[in-house]
Length: 409
Ligand SMILES: [Ca+2]
Image 1 (cartoon, rainbow, N blue to C red):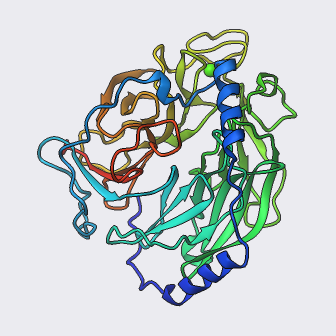
Image 2 (image 1 turned 120 degrees about the vertical axis):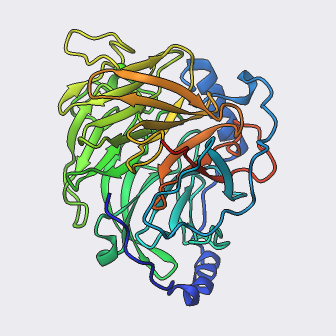
């Protein structure tokens, strides 16, 4: 993996008061009413499609993790990725986020974090979470929808472009923004026409090794959409003209129920996590134009043109964001890590292009529900808890960004 360029001085301090002004001028959030939230919860309970789980179905959470520190040391500037000699180390980097959904690093080692109610936050290089959001995004945040994925343009150092996946009144869409100073300014909607629902909104976006922007969607509670080639729902899509006016997306794969995590291994093979219904959460190897079965087949069922899952989990763990560990020198290097909501764990799976080897739960019950995990520029992993969206049991300081230093390998 290419090393990020040396950090430049942040130039956004003067813009902070402008953000406050913009807020006063009416860049406001549409928050779900209590009634809408309850209706959505009732709907989800009724149809058994509540992938992300609810507190009522959960036992009391485990006590807060003992081995955390309030602030990590400054990011490692050496060439070697961070590794520990013993057990993996867990540190709290930032606290008091509201339903964070994605974290993505900039080339200067700062990071942007989305909060589902409609904010983008900036995490400074020293681990300080800037109090003022860099953007307030007008979203319709009901059930599982709202401000979800975020991706940083591969040419960010030149163009400062950032992409957001969000739910608005007309559905789910992808919008392009530009980071100017400490302010994220909207430029254009580059993909729309994705149906939204109180459940199954997909929402993860990442750039692929081919330089295209990949978008994972869900079937929004309408199972007939996953097999419909004319629908953008229940698909993995990719976009070419993301820096221009936008163009028709290409369907990479279909037959998905709800994909919220994906990444490529060192051989550029694409793997994705997927929420199953009341069993059969999945990890799939995504091949172009393949059909992953929903709602006709699930889990390891194949045949009839359907791709079986590489890994399936009978007990619900609710897998969301995922990453391969690309940097060398750790016991997890090359492995697929993904965050789990109901399972309250990170999962580490060894994948080799055909089947799966070791498959273990990490930090189970220690942090509560987990939304995503990404690899940082220092070689540590960064995960987001998801305990403040009404479905978890928030602990003091939730939600938080945690930094995980993997054991040396
Ligand atoms: Ca499947």
